[in-house]
Amino acid sequence: MNFPTLKIGHLIPRYPIVQGGMAVRVSTAPLVSAVANAGGVGIIGATGMSVEELREEIRKARSMTQGIIGVNIMFAIRNFADLVGAAIKERIDVIFTGAGFSRDVFDWGREGGVPVVSIVSSARLAKLAEKLGAAAVVAESGEAGGHLGTERTTREILPEIRAAVKIPVIAAGGIVSGRDIAEMVRMGADGVQMGTRFVLSEECTVSDAFKQHYLQARAEDVILIKSPVGLLGRAIKNSFTTRMQEGTLSRLEKCRKCLKVCSQDYCLIQALENSQAGLLDEGLVFSGINVYKIKEILPVRKIFERLIREFRSV
Image (cartoon, rainbow, N blue to C red; front, side, top):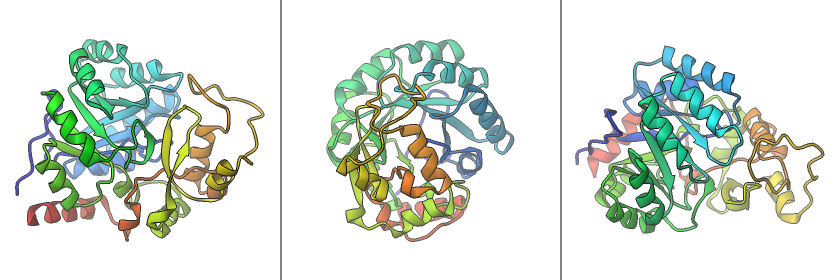
């Protein structure tokens, strides 16, 4: 079985594998550049960064690779437009955006010569994105980690989105192996987005405690939680999520005003910063539904070799 050609605007990666842009500071330059060097698309998780931090991260990633690098910027954050503008000025290759829907970003991308990819969970939004000028869409299911637009599976939403648009469709949610990639391609995907698999890479800069929490997760530990942005999220159970479900989390004393809309049940950005730094009892550990299937931490190069071998063996 051969890999399909994934074309995002003028960009054509060697392999149709996009590394999910995971916030906060989970997807940073070392991981992004390693994925790009391996022939995939490396994506910086820009949410939670300041404009200057994003500029520095893009420059660092670019200094480490000649491959394709992009950013993922959550529409729900207040500095969305500023981050998009900074990424375009830094000549980023591609912009991914989800957790809400921006119409303006397509005009900004066109003006800056940067293709924009919308992360969607329905055929309706996929068609709207195509109409507005999206170079591709990510069909992201409820099996993905982080914020979710649906609870339906990738196998349910992918055929519907594929039938609705003519632009490339990238499947996302629950994909952790080359066999998973092959299944998505057979169902019509032009490529896949994988986040969880790349957290358990040597190049991912999260704390060892974060990675060990991934490795120790069982299927029943991956749960749905309520995010302050008003969406469901998929995360690994810990004492923080237990307190969240029991309603015993301390209310915010001071809001950072980082989100356009926030329930203030807890600070999302702080919770993600805590977990990334290893303070798991005070943090939220986002993860895809199939994290329990991953048993080891590998260099990105080895992950790609395995994915390619598994894909071609199908």
